[in-house]
Image: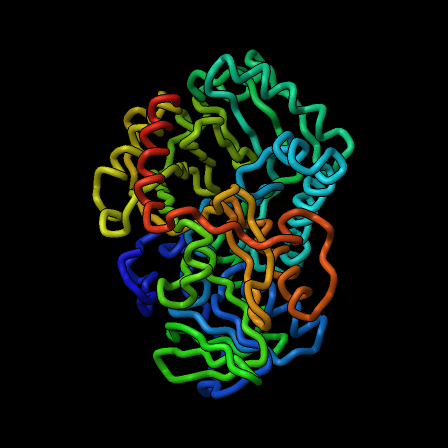
Length: 436
């Protein structure tokens, strides 16, 4: 981040493809709230799902504040991958740490998160572009192929379907994908227009009488004897309970304790000019393919409904360098290396956004202090899980027991030497470039 506080209308500085084709949501207007029962900071997937759950299932009076428009952060500028997973831990990682039964239960929770998005979209407009898809995890090195194939059987007793695609079959299905050595196809998975989807969630919240306010930024909060005083640019709001749903957009001054428990990391995305029919045929991708490779510094891509290609990867390390043109150039170069048939393609959109990375690569839904609740650490794969995390966060704030899964039963660990996190990130990027 380059500001101590989240700037108002910060999303206006970002020209994404999604913003170009989808207008901001115009929510119902209410007077500035001086007090409320439950206050939610952040009108993204987590915050809106928490608000919708509290209002519709618990009959709570809920107020949501956001420094920008609805979904101003990554909820309106991600890649639109609705995947059965989040964080960076594999089935084997969960099994090694917590046992096979817990690992299977985790995968089932991830599958449930995809189904929640699908259920929420039953009344969604066509602009959401919800599409059933397969998530393809492809081995970018030959020595990773056998290791990846061995993972398939681990999902046999879960709600996920995992199927191995051998290199020859993969080449037949995706002839334009360069030098991939087989991969796993996961379902359920889906794709969508992220900004249209967050607008749909806001519409559901309006119908549930959730009071949403944009252009109101929290600077910090104070826990008092009988309530929580939340300081904003418009004044102080007194709330009985506070839900922090900012993920990578947590202001520096809002909660120093929470800031030391995650690392905001820039993710970068570009969208090309429309592909012609011969280019689409050459690469072999359909709009039902969501591709990610096995690199330490991963690349991911999908064909959009208008035949543009979306391609994403890491961004700058520091916020002040986020818009430097070298990052768009690097991403376009990586796209052409991954899909050589598109060597003449041009990018028409490039943007970035902050994701939240946890120390142990696992997200959390927890209460850092009495009356305050948060969900964060999605590690950049949070569309599906953040929707379910919002519901779980609402349940936690209502003193409901959560499933006995690791990310619901512990707090985020604190980074050692938090002031050195950016240096650690830089060293990791150097390592990733060497091994990838």
